[in-house]
Length: 188
Length: 206
Image 1: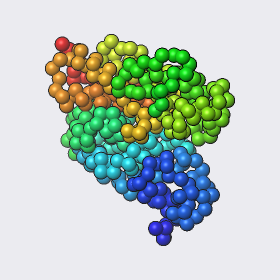
Image 2 (image 1 turned 60 degrees about the vertical axis):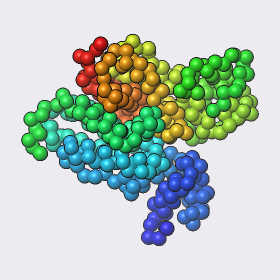
Image 3 (image 1 turned 180 degrees about the vertical axis):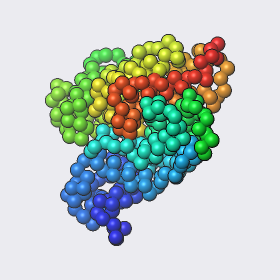
Image 4 (image 1 turned 90 degrees about the horizontal axis):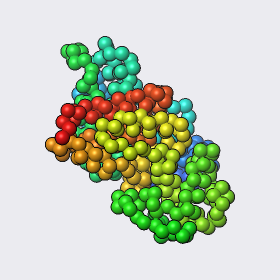
């Protein structure tokens, strides 16, 4: 498995594979070391705490299992988000790990994810006349309702499936956008 | 979750059917343990706190902790529920249209205790084995039903879901982490989002 891959990536891939059988909290550093063929110490060197490991695994999962479809318009953003909700439903263990990682106290400098930056750029392009402050709260709302955390809360707290989650998402997006000017739609 | 203990001689009554970690079934001993762990999380983070340290801070034996919370995960989930209830309590709001204010206040209280807000947010994202992710769902449903009579199922569900999602620690985490917002920006943005969610039913009271 580790062929042609650096050690931290091999560890993350191995942790992700283990998630198919075990909850994240039951995955031991020793088992990861054994699986990759390095010492437990080496695993600790790359991931000093379980928070580091959680963030790493989530990053690996996001890029390999839940890649973000590109979007430059609002409908494309909604379509991309709906596709991800379906993907989360298909791999719930992975999606919960991503939701957890997005919620912990960040281990390093916290910075916006690619998803957030893409969303902010898309909104700025589609609504060039809207002030930055208003646009930012719209962006924050859209981002938060497109997140693994929304999926996780809807699945556990409301027993909703991906299509139902998408419906709640679409309604909230429509409300968040309702105050923005519609004129710029022609720019599509 | 262990709720057999009434060691402090307090009569336990389970009043809430949807949340087995509700305030009423925490004994005085458990309260001391949970408060001690919450304190230590703020001082040291979640990773480095040993049961021994918690026991010393709570003034109980280590075995007492294990008897109440068999595993570290059990203890963490019980502590997260305790934090949400005790450190971040919500005011009873008489109307669904007060939710933006409730959410604004909640965001401000999370911002005062960032470490604890992260613990609450993370433990609600663990699926069915985690802390309950929408503890106030039933309350929201009651409020909306009391005020808005003719509401389609899907619309009602979406509004309750959106408000439950916004009224949570994960909102504070995301707005801060992904958008670098300050305390007042987060409170404003979350309250604004709640207003937007409520807009379509504003004129449909009755």
